Image (cartoon, rainbow, N blue to C red; front, side):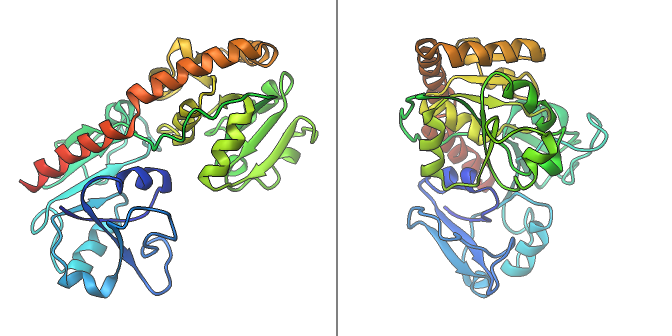
Length: 320
């Protein structure tokens, strides 16, 4: 099939465009959030940059939307209305905001749309009215079993931890920093250490890294810490499990399903999680064994092949 899709979430799109279809990514002269195309990503050739002006001449079998504004853009650029003239799937990556659990989805009560959630928790919490919903759980490209755990430190991946604060569990980091130095990765880290009042030897602001380098850096740390209170399900958590890292995670949203007991520690009790960090840091053999269980689970539950097969099914269903 020929699928129109935007590059919104790099890790998700990296998996999605490894299917067997042709993927058209809109390109505007200035790039930006609506026309960035591939953005230089090392993706298969069937993921193609297409100038917006050429889309009206391209046959498109399915439109995959990920932001409400994309529906009008697709209508204007294709000259066809999504849902009426061309089948459409809307991928909801996020947990609902505001008045949860009564938050109405922007595409609620739309008989012409299939709404695909990335977690069962999201499907449960969004009010989508009569819109048909389904779930396609994450699948990632396996980076390989890279884990060494040589550094007795905890890795944390959070985007904009200062701005998002309690949402990302940033306020909880000092509890864990007492037991292990923290290396924080992601975008928007400026001022994090000062805001938390932590010394440089307790928290390092590493920053945003390319995927290959990030995986190697994560694998050298003893454990992966996931303190987020309200998130869909960070792909970095699934990637950390793929590389073979043990996980310590707050039992919120989808994390209790994504991290089984044998893969680490999941709890709403901060003292239990702090204790788990301490135990893993001081027991490298246990950390390695726990990480192996995490990798086995991630490969079985969040593998790329199952993800692509599920998307094949959905694209066939909506195009029919």
